[in-house]
Length: 503
Image (cartoon, rainbow, N blue to C red; front, side):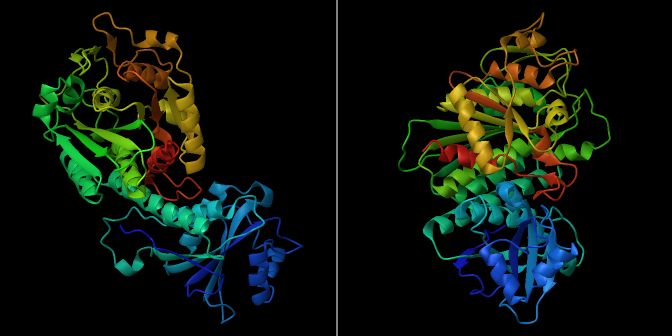
């Protein structure tokens, strides 16, 4: 997947296959708002106003009306894309508009000219970035394995023109958005990859390939012998039942210069397929368990984005990869495991495996010098019940780290909401036989008890656990710029924003 090139040109000055015009509400009566939209409407002899007055063009979020032209503009098509109430337009509204434009042009593809609107309550660089992200992320198709006639597949936007005066801030914002959107879609490719193609070993090969793209990014993959030597009894146990052995995939970003003493530690749950092990999951929708490594995919391409942006902050990413399968050597309920930090864990449910691999992964990230930890995982179904497919829930032990994560989430579009981490929740994982157990028989507080479990392995310093079970892998369209089921690439943009804020 290649990055979509960006060009800045005055509206109508560049050759394009279509011009996208943002339309905000209200539009009836007074016609369209925004200088650019009014100029386009004049050249179209009031066609946009006529559509608005007829009710066909309302300016609703996600709306797209495609017009075919007869030489009135350089482009042969105009896509009028709704952005909602004028005074309430935000980045997500523009991302959704960009996605709507890409969908309207799915049979055409080619070059899309994006018109900005000076009247919107969003600075022009932020408008450009949001529209670019929406076009690229919203134009993604998960059907890479289809063998149908290529002419019937959705066509991608191959080049984006920002219709405005050339400005360095505008150009930088659009270029950065294109890069992050491309990295997000690469993470989606991994999460959507079938488990007969993606396992812990092949995930390691993808990580090595990514490292080869960047001068200051390196990759090391630890196999079962190294895991045993390190005492990683939790990660090793989860992968024991599968013929595809577990791996610890480690990427290090060492920029030539740094502006901070922070070493950003990134840890991603990378269960390439999760049957639940001996505590077998129900069969319905088990095929979606290929997406149980979505946190690892976001982590991998998150550090790749840091390297591509050449941010002056050191980072280490750890992907704890395993396939959770039943088998003759699978770990069992009743087993007691010893994690790399020496603590013992009573197993009461082999389907609570993600926290086990993360326990050893976080320990390793601290061992490698991480001063601040961010861990991403599709961990609990209860978090999806609580927040749906829009927000991830996060837990943290540090107020400043919490503020930085929330700010990065708001800026990036990878939304997150903080949950409590009260000490009294620790009692849920008390064990009579070991230091703790990996779950609870009570049907209460499963996201927070999982966080309390993980806190036991987070080490010293700021740490955050992001439970992205809802927004990490979708069953259906989300109704915004994430229009297709499957992986979303959650975490890539969050990590990039968080790292940018540390420089």
